[in-house]
Length: 254
Image: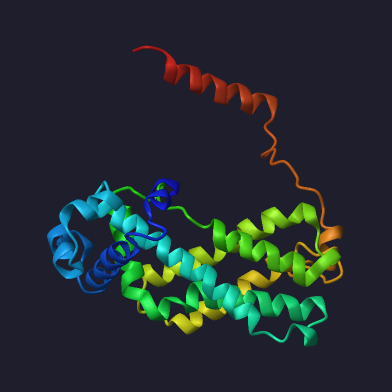
């Protein structure tokens, strides 16, 4: 992903680069990715063949990875936009902050699929079919945005030691729910977004310095007996000898 980011023009050529991605996105929304050729992208974007390869040396593979990166950046921008609209002054308690952050993250990743469900599905299918998933792993932007919001909103109530695991697990959960939406388009996105919110809450709460009880804790947990090894039924000496004799007899060459 860093290589592709390096090929993205900053000023000169930005119009051609954007035209290529916009053309590819329009085609990916309407057709299976493997049915789309570079000629189709060139014809729709209006750029030359050499220009496309200047920005995307591997052709369709690089275009698909760049589209994936664009979608992930859209998630980050959506999350940052959602948290800016919230009335944080009225959410002083940890529970309210947890509810707000989980809702913003779920909306940015799962709820955002409503606008680009087919594009997400086609790009992900292409990356999977061509084994490009390891190259398309950009998530640093959303990860950093979530990290910043957790520190800003919870302050000293959040454990610094738990910050990394909580951020990673939160993103893993919402990405998993989003993948489920892509794999099962019949599932209502509203229901999946609600599921993501509910899954995120105990994860965020787990990083608090025990000001809010972690979901799933139970007073009986501390009194539960230690695990007991399974020793099996007792076998008397005579029965043991009979079993061993049968085993040796089976192993004896005929």
